[in-house]
Length: 364
Image (cartoon, rainbow, N blue to C red; front, top):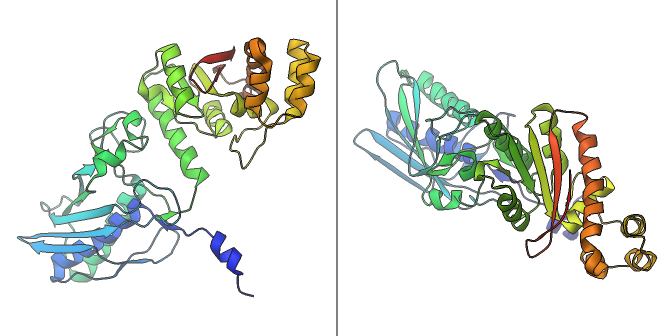
């Protein structure tokens, strides 16, 4: 049975990673270097066996250098690199050199330890490197070539786009990373976000940081950075994934972690929710009523909290007692977080921030 119109409208379209685009561009450029012709479209095999074909955005061959570009299609994912052009430039390398990777314009260079790529190397992750080596090996075998090539990946405008990613705080400078483990971008991928959280923790540990902070948004991140004087690499872009961050810290501990966020988000953590996204957890107003009763002894506020429309409304209703209310929520959030850490050697504290960036509650 076919999908209804409504189902078709709500089905999210998947896309392709920068790593998949770089691999396809590399295959096209190397094929042109060997044969004088660019395959268009160019098909590649992804790690899980899919065989997408990519149209070339442009091609160029002169003086022993071949260049091919592919426009990245991220599907329905809100990816900052959607529409960017990923370019592979391929030239012959020294005999016996194998495949050598270079960072062209718009592709970053790793400067800190803790990432899958060593400092000083182009920010091209292991799976895309393996995919590019594979297409080179296949073409070299087919055409009797040694496969000694230099691959330079570039993304025009990539340095500006990288400012909207985690790269600066991970110590990846000069541009974007060439990413992907499957070659496929799945829309609104929780796994991709959590993987970035993990890389942030890895870098913090590798550079000897003893205090990191995860925040639910920009306002709370700015507040907690100012509160503790934290450098940018200590700031983990936690977003809604408090549980994902704490679970990783349980296995890869840092001496101290601060969880910072708005009153509503941290109320959900206090209730026991580990994913704080509005579509996956909700504020329990009966809980807030119980907190008002327990922490403030304020039965009138408890009654009004039970029928409130938002956590912000409850905070406003608390008036001068809002700090005591926020402190109580922070304490419950602290207990939730400690439960996730399960006794790991990690000191945890909670910071509640209002919409103006003022710290209104703390625990731990």
